[in-house]
Length: 203
Image (cartoon, rainbow, N blue to C red):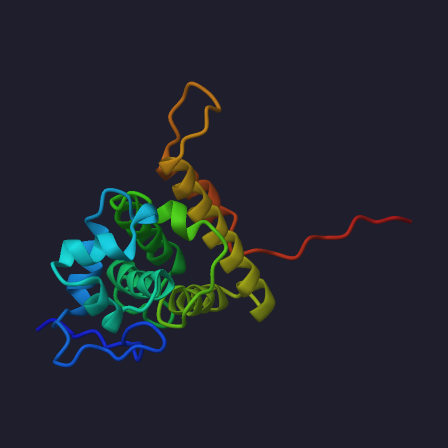
């Protein structure tokens, strides 16, 4: 059964009474699926989303009060969809992280505008990229990285991968050869986890 979205405490504009009666019943999955089906998620407005759901603009705002809240919800669902089953302690991190990266590649690029949106600076919620960060840093820690280097490895992994996906949506004319994701991923993962740089001898 689809999980129902929690209504937003906002019910109409400041200084106005919300309309009486029960709000339209919209599930979490319906909201996300309608948004993901838009021609360009990055340009989707709340009014367009309400039309896709066949509810009033005001009814939608009872469930999702802003575009930021909408993208929080989308991010949570997208991460749920790309994360493989929980990694067992001692399980090799490289095949697991390869599966995570491939899942992000397939799912994010299947939604026009999504990779572009997440490549911009924005806050992260604990149930979305915060959850992904915890699992990836734990994998690097199990591989022997210290706490600080596991965190640095996460930064390298996520910024490189998200930037790559955003460029796939907005191609740069850098040469005749088409970018190959598997080659990129192999090079990226072979460089992880990060190691301390040895300082050159100045004596």
